[in-house]
Length: 452
Image 1 (cartoon, rainbow, N blue to C red):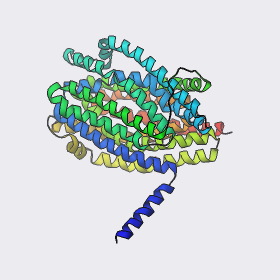
Image 2: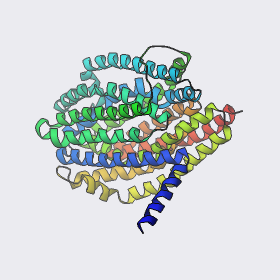
Image 3: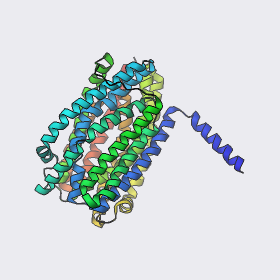
Image 4: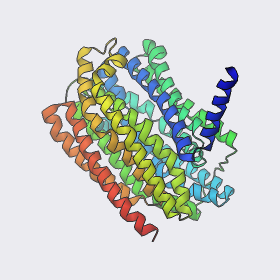
């Protein structure tokens, strides 16, 4: 009996080892994303149970807007779309030293730029936070300003962490890359449970920064284990210039995404106490299947697409895109339906405790019900966008993203006046529907042109 069990386990391991890189990578990322989001739900439960749908938690949620804007504007554009294809191409050509210098140049330039804009944001935090949440009271705004100034440390940490993460993704090392998000959530949970009783919402912010350090540390460990090198320098080689050129459309696109987050926060800030928290928590639940499936599948597929594109293997590239898109839809549609039908029970189970009472549960479940409409489209958009990035085209997906964002903001403003916080989720769903439809059509056209 024992021998049979071990024999079957061995067969299963051998089968897994024979699977294609996409399936292996996707499985690892799904598992680590699942762990991260379970911890994310526990994080939200700890925050909701301690603070409820309150002014303090509203200020904490809004304190991410300015730091995230700086990070996404000046750093994530290079790492999410421009760096990986060029870095992969260099490593495919066995130019390891050039790849290490490219990584070092991006780190040095990014750190210098973030330091300068971070100091400016620190000095002008007060008027910036007024723009973030114009509906906050004077006391609530003062708290938001204080928390935002502390959170301005996070972009520098995530710059280093995400650069190392992009190197790991390029080499298809996904385990430690995925575990970093779980450790980040552990830091926030520790802040809510250990530090908040003594420091209030400030303790949660400190825990968030500690979680960011853990996020970086685990990736440092795996980069060293993989023998990947990073040579700090400022060398504007042709490869670095190509990354910078590819960054420009992504900077515009990510500015649009941050503008959408700001617009949703600003709209929610006018809808009464707890509205910012309700919208953010509902979005966290909605993003669980998106990250677990859509982003995990897209991240696993990206290095394969980049390699196929660099080798000009059109049939392989097309087959990979179709397989990734189909797999995404097959899993996300049932996931969206399950989340819709069980939304109230899920919210009550994870968050219905302490200061987060029945009314807050009902409000969050109502917003989540509308948000579920966008799960398949947003997930598929991540896959299709990677198809463009692998072909070193960041302009077309950026334009389509901005088109969807414009519709989402306009629709959210209109619907929120009629339906409250749920109207924000409705606007987002409309925008994502337009976004993914336009992406699919243009990727089909661009692929035919690019491989002609």
